[in-house]
Image 1 (cartoon, helix red, strand yellow):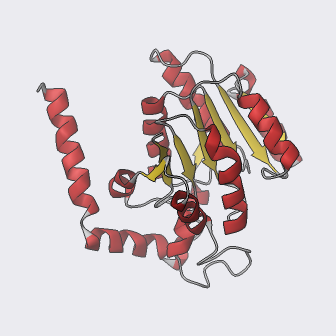
Image 2: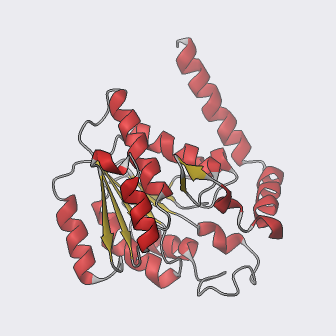
Length: 251
């Protein structure tokens, strides 16, 4: 075993031990649940566009992209476009490192606001030609058909769900798009952390405890043995908006 492999194995063992630390998990969730941090994810941007993600999840996605080597990333939920810019820029870097040379990022949103579309389309990363945006409901039959048609030429697909966070909507997205994911790639269900928050944490939203992406992911996994929850991601991150949301396709 060379020194690089030795370090990798030590890290894997450390992550496994960290995942067993119930106090670390409790403290991490307590931090996430602190009332003053409910807008914490709004504090960050990627190459100038607001991203609405935790830094830990941004790094996690970099690792997954480099490991999986997708040639297509599909994301539901665009908002300010920071995530689209993130994934396209990471795929650009991956190509520079000898990875996939031909790749695309497809974003879907029910309402791409004019000022956000203008800012995204003006961004240098967008202008490199790898990002496509579709407007409409991600679970509308016509939209699902468009996405499946768009995806047909690609060989290694990753799907990221981050739009409407109700159980019904996310389960419908999983039903529509999880079958597109390649074996050994991921369908990442964001904002599963809603299940771990206080019952009154989202008074002005249709989602909350018992009705959220985590409940949808759990229901989907129960009837789809081709997927497993990658618990090592939870053990590694501790602080994440997607606990139990990193779904890996194994068959």
